[in-house]
Length: 298
Image (tube, rainbow, N blue to C red; front, side, top):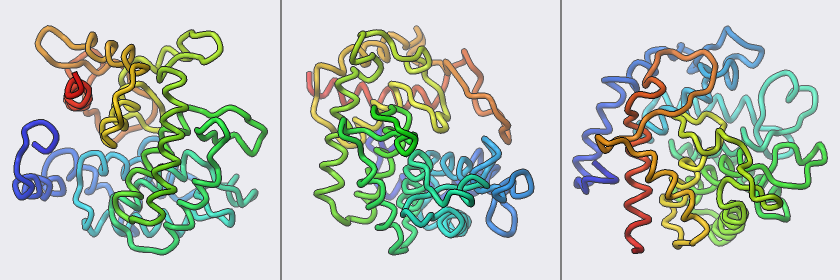
């Protein structure tokens, strides 16, 4: 309705309100316990980040993607837990025993949680602390790598897409340090463009086969459809270095006009949304809005 059909904003908001009452969104919200967590008794961090994929963080990522309204009280309750339970002394986010020992954040997790807090408009000045930390962690090549503290010198596309999504939503919802946040995103987009989204900048080979297979939900993983969906969301300028990735998306379309689910990531889930090989509503939606953005330049 919002991205393809041009429905009025009021109609979109009416439909959004149904997410908490019907379908996948309602089923996930029903799994939340009274404390505001999901899978609370299944891990050492009280269900905040693990187990994958039934924890609070990963359930909230799904609810964000479903379009659950920002003012949903159950989501806001979970936001408070994710922030209070994950903020580290360095300004980033992390969970679990390792985080308690080291007092160090993890950049992928920081990007994810910043995106959640921003999307659900959780009003807390500590969001500025998180965003500042994320900006400080950007590497000289323009991207991010969660292993930087362990000596990594080249950015990771997995970490970079998480950071980009977090900063995009932070820019939209918080409006703090907009110039710095936009500049950081431009540098990171250039990092992805240097790699044509999926090729080694040294050899030209495909970095990882999974990067050209479209999964939903992507969880913490990167692929070119997730990256292109970010590019269209920020209405980035057309760049010829995206052409090969766009062709891969276009060629994945089935004869019936839909896109299949090509890949999933192993782990426990509350229920199966789509089957690998079958038509995917999520891959179809994302592909259509990416191509609509790209073809607008033609």
